[in-house]
Image: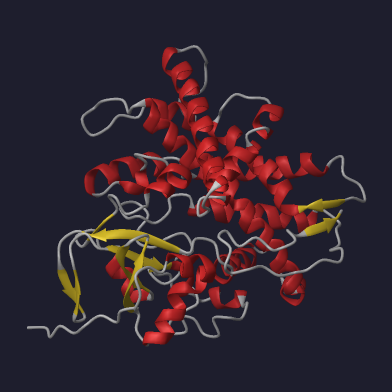
Length: 413
């Protein structure tokens, strides 16, 4: 019989304020303090277990031990994820809903996405000549149009552009408190109402779109009982397509920072070599912070490595920390795209957008979308755009979620 031993425990009533202050380093700081990859703390008024590492990720994504139901705080559901979405489902309902997303990840649909990204970047810079531009703001506009066209919401560019800020509010202010949080909730409410209106139009035949369109597919998706999803749930899931695509603007900002800070790597990269470009993109996703952690709750009490995980306990897996774990990555704090040249893929070591398997697990269904958009973007900036970096501060704050460079990267194009 396995000998149980006490889990390292952080003293104090609640550490939510420390989490907001320390950001992406919160879990790693305590991993070092306790010399343990598993420890207990208190967040948002309840006990929470924190994990970091490959084996810990395998544990976290074991669906027999953890559930996603009620794992996300209410304030996050009302801003980032929406209520009733795929992120909060488990087992057969999750697998069935996840399949709806995965059905879009075909070679044809991904190729369409890349072509739209290329066209929208070209359109965005067509009228620009010798101007300073803020990459992040441009990326949000470009990706909003890309997302709308890929989902096949039949709106003009000007109408798509006006929703850019609302979509961004959902991820920019998801971890905020006070007025910023309320603005995020208001933006989600507006977007859900707008989506519901489109769903009604599609279901009633008032608007004609192709049956292969994600808007059509989601509008007519049926649950395990053979019933159409409630239009509010469909709206949430459509936003789970649109919002993450626009959120790639954060990665694009960090991509341009990486290109500035690693000029030698960029100079040595053959932009026509798909493998080299992919390696660079993957290192951007590993090196820079994006999602800080993923959350779940213990299904039933169990013991792992001598630690007792009690039923219902909130559990957080450190995504950023695992991507910087020296037990997995050599020189984890150095930017080295070559590390991916001979990388043997595991669903539990490289987890910038979650871990586990795509088809049945909780790994982000849109990871391929992220990689393809970033590859298309770097090729556009290197091959088709002459630009320089004007004087600015090239730094970001790991305390901010998401971690946009303080000045937002500016280019002279």
